[in-house]
Image (tube, rainbow, N blue to C red; front, side, top):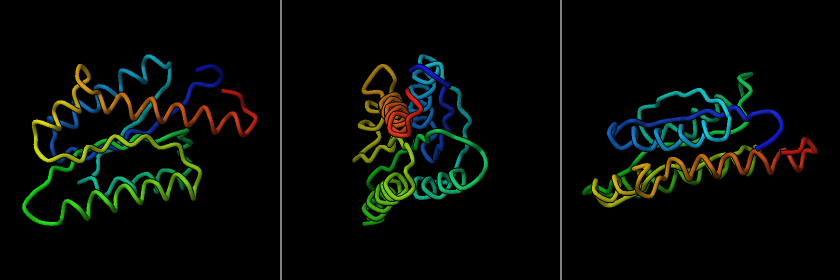
Length: 149
């Protein structure tokens, strides 16, 4: 990435701390490799991630993009379905309505084993993938704004 180095906000829901730690490691590795900078905040759960991004986006903090990191594991009730659908919808609404560059690194899985495979930087590295997606959207927004990448 050329031009001004992007500044990202990692919004992490550490409900499953050992899983979110893996997601964050992948995200931080990509940020370092891109020469970007970041700040981070923690929220109680995945459902609160969109609100935190909205707070930051409407502040004067000056972030170029946001990376949502967390994990929702299916339980015995429909709570899982509501959290997954509403969190994804709220993040998409922010991206489309407010023109935000958001990387979606929230795992929605059936069990802990699936989450660990998807979170690990040496595995599927969803934290890294979400961060790369965010950086790509920052570059695309800059291109359309005439700022260059």
